[in-house]
Length: 390
Image: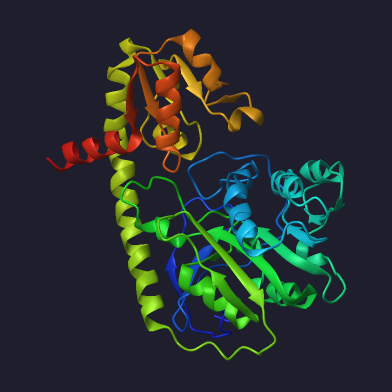
């Protein structure tokens, strides 16, 4: 192994997992020195593919998830920054501008520089007043020293060939005491009992825990002032301030490495068991088709149900996905509908195929169709696993 860990620069990288179906041929390595998981080779500039809404390693290119994180970031900024000042802000991976629009609505004198490499969506920010759009990868940009009061980086750092290098640039371009917000996927999700999807997707090269991302920020010259929500197993949102003191070398973290290895082992066992149980989940849903079933959630979990469980979507009366509907017309041969179609369809049963938004979806569904029975995929999966064990 000739590659070095991007956090601690150690060569102690050990192979721990091979994602099946990786289009980039990636392998997951664990740094035995600091505990950071990373994918090799660091293929960060592969040819662009069409959208793949799969449950496998090839998932990607739909680009709608960042909008879900806007309010969480704004909550920190309201508490940690004076939004009435004339702020200069860098928005890294600005996507369709959900953060830019919401932030500028609350910061009347701020100006944003929005960096987005995908020209298909970068134009969204070019039309926003008080925002400059830069269509480029953040690694290919260069801004003057101490240009920004705030840098916002949402679900971008995990895609980079070297987060260390980019964070050093963020440190250079932030003003003294400037605020950095970094949001990234959380490896804690690997411990979920109901996980179905391949978590190690091709477009993510680094896989952070709260500990490894915190240490990376510290090593890059930042002081963490707000840590991630401990109840959120899907995201790591940090707020940090630029400090002038040079960071110390990264000490060995054997507990972090041991915990990462335990997570991988648990993930592999749980996912294999859950995918096997999907055949029974599919059979139970199909057996209730006389109730007119609406299934809400056409993303990765739904794909796993079809691909691994053998579920026939044509047994559904309605397939709903509020967000995917904006980007595609159908999934596995079924037309995508919105929640507004529930009343006319009048389903007797609504199956919720979502983890993070199951509670929110259930409330909306109950309002739309009060008499409909609502079943969560996690409950179906739990029953199926029980039957399989018996």
